[in-house]
Length: 300
Image (cartoon, rainbow, N blue to C red; front, top):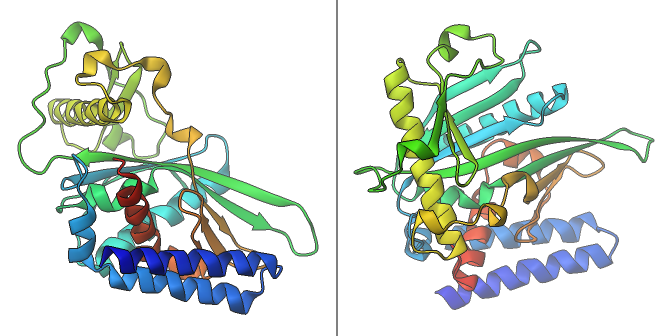
């Protein structure tokens, strides 16, 4: 079965390369899209779950969206991505709950957090981590505008919280004033910084300071455990701050609106010719391609 998945993925990649040689012949490019759909179809939820063998793949996921500061178009783009993930969850009957959402004066999204409380959510969504660029081209012009949004994915432990003890002296806990119209939702916000690593997390969607503090601590522990795993160290105390990869440094995906409404996944190389379909929550080919890539390289 895995050999078949690999063959389909190779076919999709080959057709995409041929399309590029043929100056992006759009009919050939669509064949790449349908070949990638075959990969996704052959990897139903059960089969994909079998490939998710990473340490935290079985856990739920907290997906955090943040617009690039200072850009109205990035805030609108963040709103679209938020909708994309909610639609994906709804299509599959998954539970996706928006626990935090901060809007700008222009009704865009500054930041938001979704909690997916089902098994393997982290494994499915890990490939979404990084910067998502939307490129808007003006007709008759070679110039384009880029709107950028960062997506972070953190394990959401469905059972007991991680058994990780953190020294209180290593933490800076504060109550930040968040830039949002929903002031009543931000007054109990809690930010926690882990001094040895510089990792900072935030929780503000709960109804009390104490509840937000507990959630922020759990997010911090989850992030530190993942970073330790990525760096190949046995404990959080061995994490090297200068080796931590910032999600802003990871190109995840590029979405182009003109002349062809297409989506390119930077990590896997897969390209889809239907931007509107992707934004409507049909991201299964992208998820399947990333799971295949991880399975082949045996990474987290």
